[in-house]
Image (cartoon, rainbow, N blue to C red; front, side, top):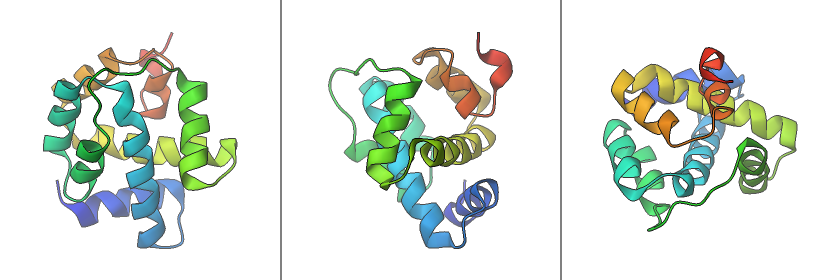
Amino acid sequence: MKYDEFLKDVQELGQYADRDTADQVSRAVLATLTPRMTPENAEHLAAQLPEPLSDAVRESEIEEPESFGVEEYLRRVAAATESRPTTAELDASSVLTAVAHRISGGELNNVLSQLPSGYATLFGKPELSN
């Protein structure tokens, strides 16, 4: 996956004015998701992302995954991006939908299997939510 193509997708999905905003939001969204994942699965995801996004995932890895739902995740994204919760939801959805479009189906399944079903909607896969 090419970094510029990924950012273009995020910029279009989130309707961001520029590439730099898409980059900042992408790093924040992915860095906030990583603590929810096992180190092994975070590494698998990082391997399918272009640098510097893979670096954002690797830098946020932790030994024991935290357990938090979508609401807490969006609160953390809002804090990381200094935005409102509704904006954080758009930011997360823009980035994670771009991720879902660009990683393998097997890797997407691995990521989603670690998360409560409510996260599937953020990845643009509402049919996988309960």
